[in-house]
Each structure stands twice: as C-alpha cells, then as structure tokens.
Image (cartoon, rainbow, N blue to C red; front, top):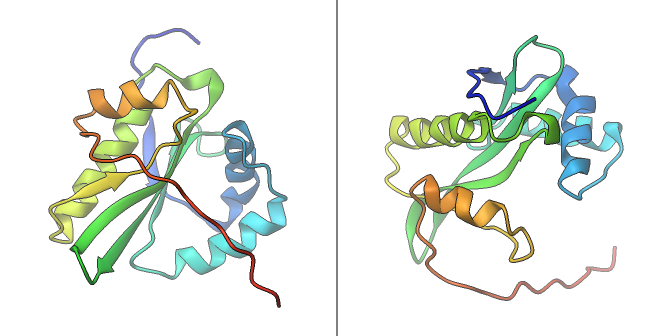
Length: 151
C-alpha cells in the first residue's frame, strides 16, 4: 500500500464492527473470537468514558482503531489513556495512526483533561518511535503483574 499519507474517515465504532476489531486485534497479538469483541463492545458503546474510534475508507473494512478511556485516579487526578491502538498491517505508515492519536487528543481536550498517556510493551519496537514522534514522552518503565481470581 505504500507510504503515501492517507486521510481515513474516523467515526465511533458500531456493534457491526466487532469482526473487524477482532481481526485487527489479532494482528497486534490479541486474537479473540468475534463474539467476545461484540460482548465487550456492547458495554463500551454505552460508556461515555470509553470511546472506541475506527478509521475506514469504505465504512466496512477497518484500517485501524483506537480505544481510549477517561480515568480518575486518586493519586494523579483525571487523565485519558490510550488503551488500544492498532493500524492494519497493510495500512501502516500512511498517517492513520497519527489521525487516531490526534482524535484521542481532541477528545481529551473536549472533556477538559490535560494529559493523555499510553503504555507500550517493551517488545513493540516499532511503536516506541511512533509515540515519541507523536509528542509522547517516556516517563517510566514498569513491571506488570497479574493474579488470577478464582470464580
């Protein structure tokens, strides 16, 4: 697809986008069944604090998506966090990721939040220069721990 900048159409995700969101997420290494995405998306679509935006050029095939959330943290206050950003392998290096990030920054501004953060796995070598080029500053490195909860 080349490196020519592309202006994609950005819009809010719809429930019908679940299969495309699942396809894109698998490219990032998070394969999930479409019905799992649909269940999660139904919950996110009704939340004012968790917008999901998609990039498309034909309204059916998604070129990428960004999931963002407004968080209120006791110790740091309000912030917006980019919790998911994927651009289709075939559409990378065309400016779509920057369009999606710009939309997240605009949303933060619109809701009166002055900080946007993003976490990026240390193994995602290509994402670090992207975020730095988009004006993000690395502020820390951390370990992430998980503990399963018995149901």
